[in-house]
Image (tube, rainbow, N blue to C red; front, side, top):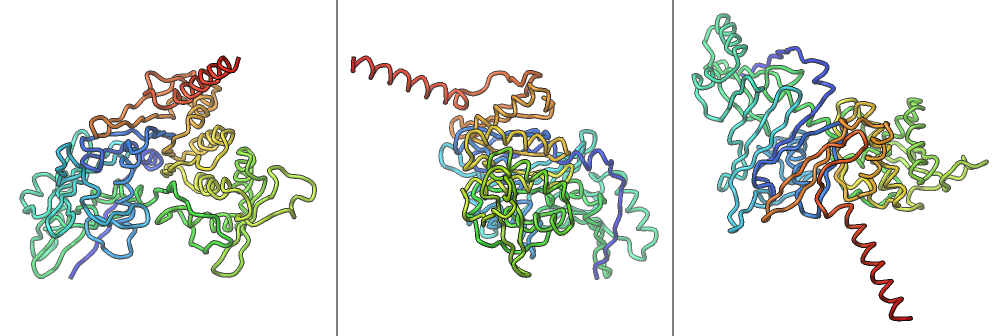
Length: 453
């Protein structure tokens, strides 16, 4: 018999709104050595292709799809909607000599608390949890499967020890602490012979170590760079505060719900963003039946007399609308403290729209949303710099992380913006590319002109 009790401890509203503030990864793909990034309200990940930008976020997505699975997939669900692997070897770091590591770790900080889980490859068994470290700078505990009662009692917080004493006094059989796996985390349980296990609750900020990070992982909104082709109709989905899987599947239903609830503010803000990017002036979600929704957009980029009837299916306009719409809807659907991870939000956008997209990201941060944008767009970054220089975005709200590969391993250079929107030394292969390309063209044109004369 297994009994379940819910034990809740106070959690400050500041930490709840703040959300995830740091991510640490080691032993994962090109991130062979431990790398850490700070998550600000607006966090930019930039760098060359295959430099490790996605690799710093994918372990978090692995945890997300493992927690969301409809069954227990073991320590990690490798092949899911957010990240897809068919072999453990595909995600473990490889040394210069071609040997793969056996362990990778992912750490998450929320407010003053942090939790790090290390996964180890077991021959014939895939990945298993090697250990989990949790706590704050003052107190940290390490849990491993197979720990004895005394070993656990020596590392857990005083609250757990007091809890054990209190429960022991009221039970006929004295229980013992054990460590159990709960999907991608380790949990504490009290086990008494003939009475089963007494598990501590996972939710509500309770005593479960993973309670400090699991809700934030579940609430993460992920929008991949490949967002599919525009469809004539979209499936009806449930809409809540969490969005399992990837977000693009929910876009049409979110708009439909805003319409049904009369949420004119959200709809107006969305339409304003679409106009600001020069994509369209209006979008509506039109239910077809109980299972399908059609998205219709204004054929023109601005409102004109009679334009309310000039709407076409989203599949009949340019790719920019269908690819950018999920980005904008995700930003407006997210609650304060919720993390929105956008891969290539600028895809299929005209340079003017890439620059304007910075304003949509900044608006979301002012609503308390935490945005991580992985981008190759120098214009998007320039738009962020401009908003800071204009005083529309606080410089401390922005963090820039540049990824590069040194000897095959990812290295991260992080920097801040000053009041003028400028930053210190930045690797050469970003905005300087445009300057070098323009210089090369001018030299070639001048040389050709001279030969012709």
